[in-house]
Amino acid sequence: MSDPSKPKLFRRILVANRGEIALRVIRTAQEMGIETVAVYSDADRTALHVRRADQAVALGGNKPSESYLDIQKVIDAARRTGCDALHPGYGFLSENEDLAEACKQAGVEFLGPPPHAITVMGDKVEARKCAMQAGVPLVPGLQEDVDAAHLVAAAKQVGYPVMLKAAAGGGGKGIRIVREERQLIEAFELARAEARSSFGDDRVYLEKFVTRPRHVEIQVMADKHGNCVSYGERECSVQRRHQKLVEESPCVALTPELRAAMSKAACDLAKSVGYVGAGTVEFLWSEGRFYFMEMNTRLQVEHPITEMRYGVDLVREQIRVGAGLPVSPVPEPRGHAIEVRVNAEDPDKYFPSLGTVSRINLPGGPGVRLDSAMFRGMEVTPFYDSMLAKLVVHGADREQAIARCLRALRELRIVGVTTSLSVAKRTLESAEFVAGDYDTGILDRIEKRAAPRDRELAMLAAAATRFLLAERAGATVEAAAGKGDQPPRWALLGRTERLRRTMP
Image 1 (cartoon, rainbow, N blue to C red):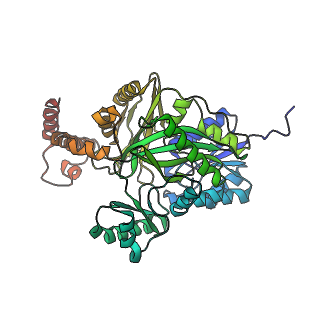
Image 2 (tube, rainbow, N blue to C red):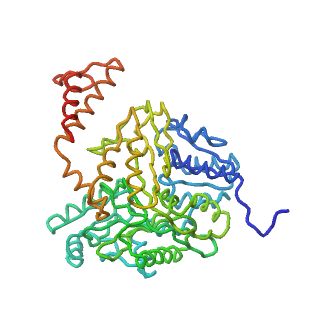
């Protein structure tokens, strides 16, 4: 006989997302005996998350605004299919207080924090004020929105270099680094314009630019009974244009005392806003000190490295605390974990790459996990994020984890779409990453040190690939190149091969 005092888990969950994170949530829910409902756009009608869910509801359209970002369509899908909970994944509506409120009004449990917590932590100015009240260290700066009239005086007060950041920002948008006063006004206008176009909010605040910073974040989980636990930290300093590429856990720069202090600060902040569910508090670390940056009120892309070290399922914990159960005790961490994001993009210019995945060779072996929704014949469209997969490895120590990750990267092959794999390999092989003595500028330094012939080889290989694909499609060489004066395919291939043979 069931215990009426014990909260029941959900019967059916709507997964309001797509791709690998939708598949990730579906798998855990099904393991827990919970039915799942997928939603999908026209472009995703053959996607794996649609096929693996127990039910699927078409949202229509291709653009995110026509499908995954339409709150009314998502709520209607949950109602029509009798869902009693909704998991937002990450991206799209995952940090949208209006969706959380709409779920509340519809009697559907939102598997994330309450609307108030999303609102406060989603506004970086308000988040800094909350952090200050909770006693969390802050980067020196001005918590309030600054305007052009007071900007010069504010920057002088803080001291150069400074950062201008969008109050409603995210994903690296609306950020400008200013090193001297003559750059300030132009950078301010650019930051405001980007913030306005990206978030519909042009407020900008100012803070001191920390030199040689490391980006370290703390994973927290809070329940409805006022409890909050930490699953340690993740190092996310390998990034370009504020977009993360390689993450690892633990961070080799932290002492046990500093790790404990950061974890306490993260939990104190979460408790101060009545947080529930999974969240990540992001810090800058520099010269033995840490400073609050922001809180992401959702599951992070890089959560699998925490799962690998702690032997937990964070999605399972989200579902449990959403159902009213207390958060589980935190196991002892073990070993070292690394995650590499595999993006469909030009590895040198970081431009998105489109195409059809014609062949995949997946890595395997001990301690290797690949989170992906790829399949042969999958079309990579311009409508969504460029991430194709997340390669996650776990080793007994950092040295083994790096070796294992490089081995898995060599095994992983994706044909038909250009990917960022080569950048990840260069990073893991670099002396400063191997030594663990790096900061958020590591990718810029690696790219500057790249030999000219490496870049030439990449350009030639890309050109040769275009010609081969064009021939296969019956197009002319000129059409593939876009110009009439390009060398023939055989010349490009021969030159590429000769260059490759000269490389060490």
